[in-house]
Image 1 (cartoon, rainbow, N blue to C red):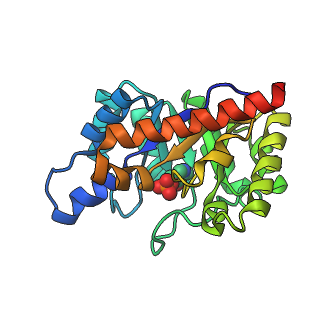
Image 2: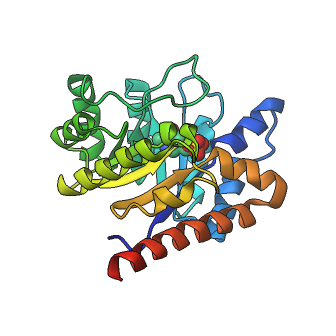
Length: 251
Ligand code: PXP
């Protein structure tokens, strides 16, 4: 059981609001600084091929100006690989990307795409960047991640989040089993997508998870109560769920 669950804050949607006006405000780098002050353990940013939110300049400023580890989300393309190798973020999370999607729908097909992904995993790792693969919580995807030599996987929690509390039991069980298998395989296990105050607890209680990455909900909540309050409340809910899970295990 990992006692401490890290919170990575995804600041993409600060850039979404900025880009709606094509001006410099609000600045995602300022949001990253505030997230750090509020207790975030890392910053995540996804540079999409169409640059719909985060820009190349944001990545440059995040790597130069923010002390927290940067988790650079990227598609497995040569353009993104070159950018990652130039900036050398702490971590790179390989995600699937379709131009027409609203957000990252479903995990990367590490199983079907082993041949394509291998070079990206190898080159990022050679540059000292910690590689993670954003995958669905399934055994075949985890085993492929292991074969590819990625040290980290991030489990896609979208199906769990979409199911809602009345019917998320099956999806939660998939996440629990996948996180346990990741641990058995020696993979560091993260999770994220669609997490909110209402659904974070059961995921935070999964003992093998080390990090949650949360974006859209936190940035939305920050509109109402500020970044500081949104991040502190999320942190508190995660810590409480983890402490209760720890207590029930030792009881
Ligand atoms: N993790 C990954 C790999 C993602 O692509 C995203 C969404 O960009 C998130 C976590 C965060 O998801 P959400 O914005 O729904 O919290």
